[in-house]
Amino acid sequence: MTGPNFENFLSAFKRLQDSGKNFVAVTLVKQIGSSPQDVGAKALVSAEGLEFGTVGGGKVENAAIKEAQRMIQEDHKNHFVDWNLQKDIGMTCGGVVSFFFELHKAQNPFHIAVFGAGHIAQEFVRLLMFLDCKVTCFDQRDEWLSRLPKTPKLKTVLTEKLADEVAKLPDGTYVTLMTMGHGTDLPVLIETMKARSRFSYVGNIGSEQKRKRLDSDLKTAGIPESLIRDFHCPMGDHFGGNNPAEISFSIVAQLLKTRDTLMISKNQE
Image 1 (cartoon, rainbow, N blue to C red):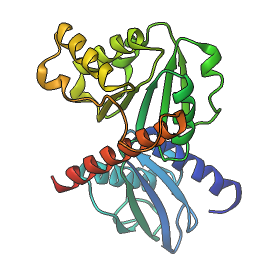
Image 2: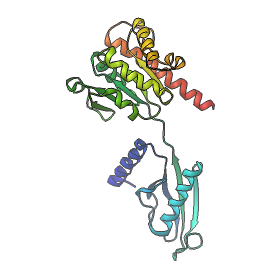
Image 3: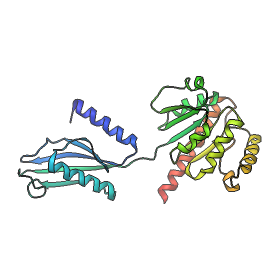
Image 4: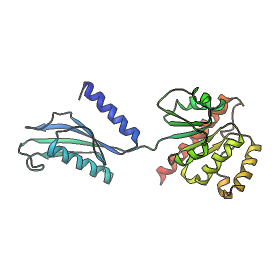
């Protein structure tokens, strides 16, 4: 597969990666005698069926799709398959084809939610753009959201009801709060802590004094004592100065440490 067809394959491959689906790349690697496609033909198959391309159509392609779906269901390792088109597939032509089935498993996305688009968020979000992550930034102020970089990695959401957005966040999100102040942080933090087990990280910008105030307000809101201790405020590792750029570096460092610790724990399970 070369030229525009290969570019289309790469686009479809990337789309499936971004979708979070498990999928299989099927490649025709050898043929003897007649076969319905040329060597190098590719198809992409998910649990739902054929997503892109073709390795021959008809019975041989149906067999390849079923094999790919079995591979996804059983988490089967990559492998080659040799099929006699007449004996194994039931086709009239007597050729033999060899396919390579390669499983691509969905990666847990590094998704970061940023509540607030003010001075610190402006630096923080730009720093995150250097990482392999997806970022969603929420704010009530369009003029601040519009200052953020335009990139596929970043989604901006203009809303007056910041706390309502918490329930829409995917599991495993890293939640960071840096809104206009305590009055706008607290409702979001309460909703986040109610569902703390869903999130990989929760942090709120602020001082030690603000931490005490947040702890008290969370307790009043009925958040259990054990959960009240389970968020970061002040947010970020303890280094650097007090300007937005250095604060942002310290928060990114804390996020990366948390991510890597969680990955190590998962791999040891």
